[in-house]
Image (cartoon, rainbow, N blue to C red; front, side, top):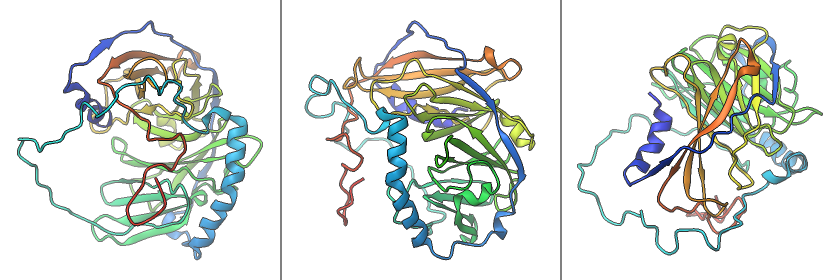
Length: 367
């Protein structure tokens, strides 16, 4: 049921794990607002493809430094991760969980069904993202999207600028990237988002397809989120689209009113929280669970998950959060960390606090 969450947790359950219940700090929303709805987009299949992809990529590179300066000015601690306790952090020496031998379990054989080239680009980071539905694969990169027929591998829409979907919506005049696309399988619809940082206010732009065909029209919305919704991550839940961001200004956990957006409603609500239990890591974004297949029972809170490295302070743990939204009286909504799971020692430190410290073959560009 909780596919994304369960896959991550199962590996940790193999070894002994101490589960503790901390004194829960339950907080209510720090801000609430409604989205601005500007109707339906044009059918994406009818939008003209970008005729000069390299020009689009160059515009992104030119604007990147200015955008980063703005992000760091408004949210200075998000620039990089910090490791104040790296000297005493565990593990020391070889990773105690490193598997050095082939296991005895019978290998599971799989057959490659499709393998084809998607979009390419020279933006850094490229922020590749994609999802699959019944008949299509939709891929986003900085700063374009493309849609492919899943069976024939043919490109059926794009590549087109990301912000073209949001034409006319507040914040759509700039194409800032950080795109996310999801397939909401319980609704048989598609979800797409990118942020907008080019004005005096910052916006989260969200679109929901009007049918199960992503090449058709989309409902388009703009939400004023005030402070740099950097590195946002989304999850689908029965009662909302849940989002977390890399933001230390006290606005980093959100939920958007899913049922209103699926219906093309004019004023979907958004509720935001200041996470009282952020790891002391600087750059950080907790992950919302994405509830695929059968939904959790009605009323079950949305779930978020993250790690805590002892190099940041405390001990090596997995942290679980719950967000319970009340769309009738939004001020009654709550967010809290509900579990801390102690796990074997691990390190998230790759040798530096910058963004390009992992070598890859065939190029000097690091990951």
